[in-house]
Amino acid sequence: MPEAAQHPQLETLLQHPALWRGRGAAPREGFATGSAALDAALPDGGWPRRGLVEILVPRFGSGELALWAPLIRRLTHAETPRWCTFVAPPFGPFAPAWREEGARLDRLLVVQSRPAESLWALEQCLLSGVCALGIAWPQAAGMTELRRLALAAERGASLGVLIRPLRVAREHTAATLRIALTRTATHLRLDLLKGRGLAPRVVQVALP
Image 1 (cartoon, rainbow, N blue to C red):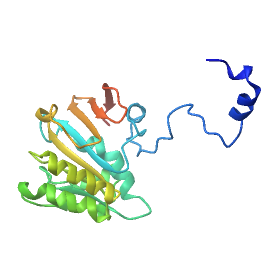
Image 2: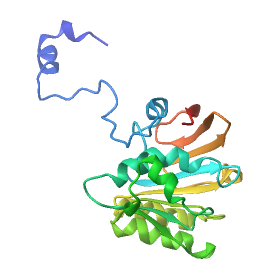
Image 3: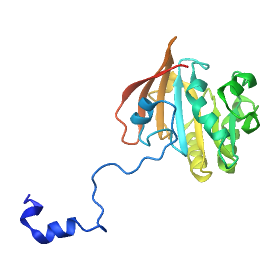
Image 4: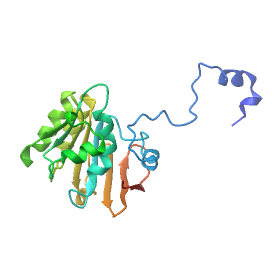
């Protein structure tokens, strides 16, 4: 292709301030994760501000809340008050631990529901517009339910997080981001499995 310098009119056009040139990715506006390495690896430069995310774990209680603690702390101190909601958590949130993390307890909400109703409860939370973040631990979720959750999160401008068993890694999903998490004594290993424009890779996040 001829160089622009060989065509003065084209060069003049290319220098016009009103012309947008695709010199790189669009600005990334995700929520900071608390890990610079993870922020750099994620498509939005952090956690997406809305939509559905899946964290796959070998067992519940594998460090998933440690992964989300920095965002929960930030959201509970946001100027616009919205809930950070735990739907049917397998382990009851320990208030002193969240206080030590710096989260505001009056912005944390726990919804106790039967396992069969947890996805419905999360959907209502995401759709309401008063929840910034909703986290649930379902044992099973069908594609129809996943699509409903993704749509509810978009409509409610909220972020839904499903903590799911690692065995579903090969199943189809409506989540915009899917990560497999395993924990060691010193860090969280995150296998980034799916995301818009995401190349599969591994990121390690140090535990505090």
